[in-house]
Image (cartoon, rainbow, N blue to C red; front, side, top):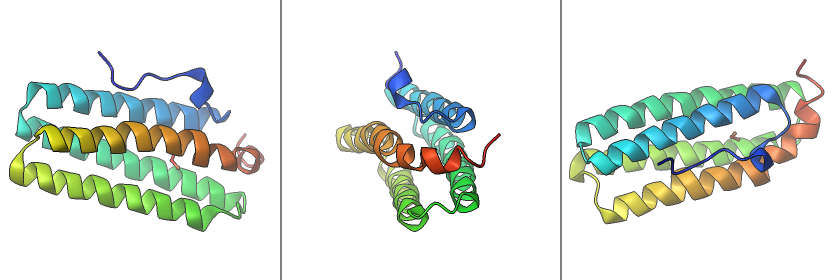
Length: 135
Ligand code: FEO
């Protein structure tokens, strides 16, 4: 059963970004599937798979925001950097100690709560600017 389910209310109204968010959700769900199986090696592989997509997605957003001269770009970028750092810390922790209850809660807070909050409260703000530069 998926942990994060796409809802129309998460849409920023820009197809390329919505599609990337959906793919991000897919990868988060794959990770939680792996966590429920409890194989640390598979979990780490999936975390790397997720992280690479996060970098791709954040870069894509930042390039569009730059192109649109979005005034909040630097603050937005800082949120992205914070998230990447947290994912990396969690990966290190899983690599050392595997996934226990505390780590699962942290994964949930970061990959579900933070991500949905970021999409619906932070990403949505660039929509009126970025819509001007995407065809
Ligand atoms: Fe969709 Fe700012 O991440």
